[in-house]
Image (cartoon, rainbow over all chains, first blue to last red; front, side, top):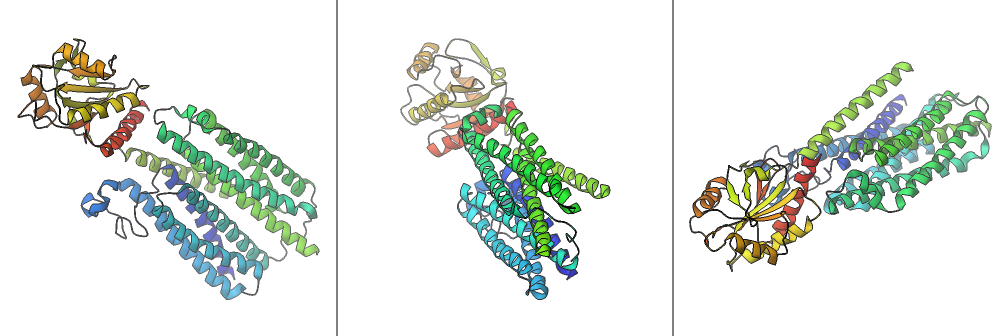
Length: 310
Length: 195
């Protein structure tokens, strides 16, 4: 039982790391570093020298990009393996508990789809819709993993959340924040994709003018950002102020969400007013995925305490 | 708790450092190799001004060899060069240089007239001449191109030169595919040089 918790925790952490690495592939433009899939230039270990590159790929060879993309794939394979092991352990011990079994089963199948999407990305030379889908599935997988590890934790620690009582009528708030966050992330990827196209067509335009050329939907990202800030404030108020004896997990995750949102606003404004710096873009996305995970943690805790009272 | 916080923070900092290293690496991985430095020369442009290797500094240049009465590939090359000249009209850091390989016919006046037919009245596209020996020498030893039977035997290459006067790449001056790559490479050099 403890084994499952360890494995699901490792899977979650590794998936978060993989989201970071995936974002890194994107901002460094290494998505087509390997022009074939699953091999890289026809080899299981990418070439280190032009003499190892098959003739038809000769002009596409860039050793740096090839190895960045290769690390992403290798790490992806490791995460896939870890999730498979987690599934096996989960099915062995928890097949009778739907709240643990189903999230991990779904996460496993989504992981298979992720691998397949990786090959589609290479085939379609980085179709923008597929890139976003690739990210969305990763976010859903990480939330499912987080959820099932938390459920497994509660199974062992049945006293957790017993002494806490949260407002009953905030289920809608969790859904609303999650949906808003996911839309916000999609909008963000749209902005990044749009910027890439504009930069390609107008290579000499200074970074600060790129955003001006983007059109109005960047404002939607900002406005929805404020809506999410408001909703998170409301959630904090309900869970921390309007609850009876909220647990440490809930208090800390509520506060962490607010802190991360502040960081997100600062990073976002830096991108708008300073310059479009790839490293900031990377963290802007990665922290968004943390916020989503924290909402999932809160939801699971809230549900646990509610079940006790029912 | 505090300990975990600092551990996490330092891991994230390390990840940030690693990521920024990778991003830098990726950015410079697109760099074109440096082939060689353009040697010293001193030619004259269509306005009668001296043009030397120093005029290559601080600008990205595209250079070719041609002659005005050429009926072979030159009209296509001139057409392609003109397209580039128009495409980069907003950017003063790009210049185009066409060197005649027929200095007997292509005098200063003839080159000026030829330039104006192309709609060139500024110095973003300069047409150079010198005496045949010097042209031959620059072409053969400076740019490593065939220069034995001038004017007919001139190369059809476009040569991309960076802001330090170094040759970075050769292109076929007559086909569209090469032009597309050249366009990308010009902007790449510009971006690196501006930042």
